[in-house]
Length: 147
Image 1 (cartoon, rainbow, N blue to C red):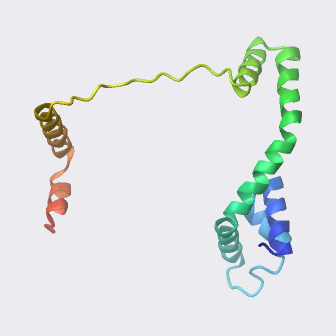
Image 2 (image 1 turned 30 degrees about the vertical axis):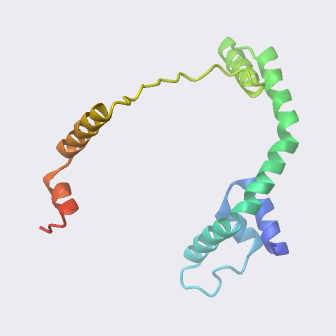
């Protein structure tokens, strides 16, 4: 469970998108005793992002969910009232994508051979190709040889 300061930092971070500025605002004494206060702020911001990642994600999802109706209304408005046809088209495509009507991504499938001999030949060909792409130093490193 987060402290009140950590909760305040999460809110400020989500609002601003700036972890370090949020540290400066919520923890004004951060780095005050340090010879390099900006480094202390950077470190604190990094620690907070790492330690509170799950809570940040949860709060971000809540924010996105609560603002989604407003954002969709804006997208719809742009799609119907923008002066530029290109802007209207982009907004309309975004609206449809979010509604689940996004075009299917191209899927390329490659059938794998089931014959053990073909599998062995394919494996050997891929291994040979990979080794040929390696530098002599990389090959030696794999063998444990130092230069």
